[in-house]
Length: 543
Ligand SMILES: Nc1ncnc2c1ncn2[C@@H]1O[C@H](COP(=O)(O)OP(=O)(O)O)[C@@H](O)[C@H]1O
Ligand SMILES: [Mg+2]
Image (cartoon, rainbow, N blue to C red; front, side, top):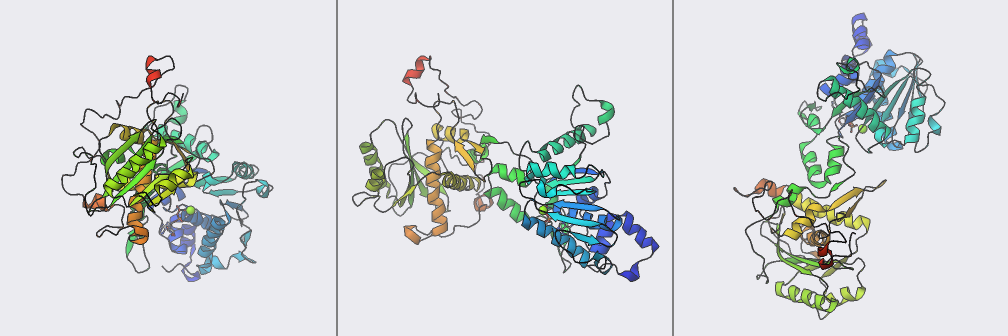
C-alpha cells in the first residue's frame, strides 16, 4: 500500500493525521487496523492493561501507537520494555520499519537510529530495553509513556522500577500480554480493571461495599486504576488481513489454532489462546476425552488374533501399589484399542514376570514399554532377555519430569484426537479422571500425580496407559523402523478420527451406564479408625 508523501500534505490532512490514529496507521504506515485494535488505539485513557490471545496483533498495535505518539507529541520520553532481547529487537525493528517506510516520517530521525535510544527531531525519544530480572537498568529516566510488551512475563522487580519512572511526569502506561502467572502485578491490575468493566456493564454484581457512583458506567479498576481489554483467539479468527496480492486470510490461522488445541495441555491452550489465567492445579485429562474413548460394547480378550499388532504398557508396583499391564491392538483405521487389562497386587516378582511373559506370548506383543522407575535392572533384563517372548522387544522408560510430561502429553494428544478406545473399566476410568497436575514454577512442565486422600485411586493405570500410548505414537511415527510395522491409511493429522468418524459413533459426555457416573463416582476415603481400613489393600498409602 502506498503511503502519503510530502505532496499529499495540507492542513486538513495533517489535522486528520494528528487526531485520528486509525487514519494515520492506514495513510502513513499502510496498515489497516482490526476493529479491536481500533477500539484500544482510539481510547485516550492513560492506563491500559490488555490481555489478549497470541498472534492477534498486540505488538503491532503497540508499535503503531508508538509511531503515532512520536509524531504527535514533542519532547517526550518513551520507554518500551520487552521480555527478552529478541522480542525487544523485533519490536524496535517494527517501529523503525514503519518510520523508514514512509518518506515523511523517515526524515525525522535525528542522528542514528539505535535500539538503545532513537531521537526524533521534535525532541521526542524512544528507548527499547530488555532489562532481564533486575530493575537497575530502568531506573533514573523520567518517562512520559511506558509500554510493557508481554507484561505478565516481566520480572516483578523490573515492573516496579519501570512503573516508578512514570511518577514524575504522570506518564501513561500501556501493559499488554498473554496470561502467564496468577497473582503477578499484571494479573492483579488486569483483574481489578476487568472486574470494574464487568460491574460497569452490569455483567457482575457490585460487592456490598462497592460505591455504585464509582462503578456504574465507569469501567476503570477501583484499586489500580487500569482500563482493560480482553480478546481471545476467536476474535482473531474472525477478522481478515489483506495480503499484497489483494487476497485475504484470517488474522489467526484456523489450522494452527486447531493444532494447538489438539496438541497443547488444556491449561496452556487456555492461557495462550483463550487469554485466561489457567488454574494452577487441576485434573490432568479432560473428562470428555476420557469418556469419548469409552466403548461400552466390547469384552476383553486373552489371545491375540493372527496378523494384528499388539503393544503392551507396564507400570510396576514399587511398594504398596499395584502392577498394571495394558495391551492395545492397532486397528485398521489407525486407532488403538485396549484389549486386555492385567492387575497384580502383592504378587511376587517371579510370578509377575511369568504372567507378563505368558501374556506377551499369547498376544504376540510387538513391543512392550516398561516403567523403569525404581525397578531393578534384573527385571528388565529378564523380560527383555533371550528366553523371554519379549526378547529385544522391551523399552524401558524412566519417569523423570520431562519424560513423564512427554509420555503423558502424548497420551493426552492421542485421547484428544480420538485415536484410543478403552473399555468401561471402573478402576482405569477412575484413575484417569482423578489424575492431578500442578504447574511447576519456572518450567514448562507440570507435576503429574495421583489425587491425595483417595485410598483406592492411584496412578498405576494412567502410567501404564501412557506407556502403552508410546506404542501407538511410535507406530505412527516410526513406521517400519526398529521393528514397528507400518499400517497403511494412517493419517498424520491429529484430528483425523474426529473428521472421519463413521455415522452414529457414540460420543461421550453423559454416560448412561449406571456403573459409572463421573460426579457420583464412589471414592473410598478410609480413616485409620475405620474397620475397613485394615482390609484395604492400600493401607499404607496417602494417609
Ligand atoms: N491490523 C493488522 N493488519 C495486518 N496484519 C496484522 C495486523 N495486526 C497484526 N498483524 C500481523 O499479525 C502478526 C501477529 O501480530 P503481532 O502483533 O506480532 O501479534 P502478538 O503480539 O499478539 O503475538 C504479525 O505478522 C503482524 O504483522
Ligand atoms: Mg507480541
